[in-house]
Length: 153
Image 1 (cartoon, rainbow, N blue to C red):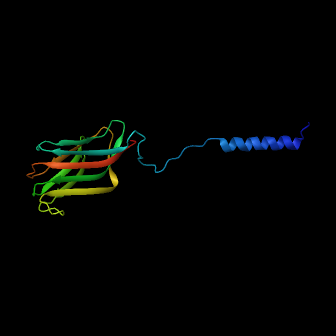
Image 2 (image 1 turned 60 degrees about the horizontal axis):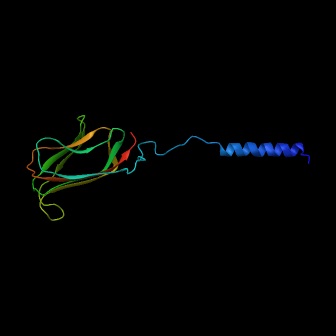
Image 3 (image 1 turned 45 degrees about the vertical axis):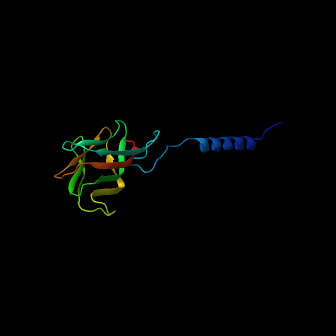
């Protein structure tokens, strides 16, 4: 069976078109800012109770190879006094400073409550520790819960 030049040109054009359609292109990921890590579990949840005050207390530590984006901060104390609360990193950068008002909480119990949802999140650089400090206050215990996710640095 003999092939015509038209068939040869058609076969070559189809092969060339197939080659271009299967060729890979650059991968583009959006948004260009930090994205959720592809680790086993990208969720961060640090919870606990602080019973001793005076020196800064570590709440969460970002791994050396990943940032943490904090999305929610919840601090509670049963003590009815006002208190200045500061979150800072180990390089001395103050991340959050808030005065928690004393008196009766909105749920009817005495004590203090700070419940902050951060819409865009608070970035904790890789390898940084997050500490809590207190201003002049008379707190006997503090319950905390920090929520967020790991991100690529």
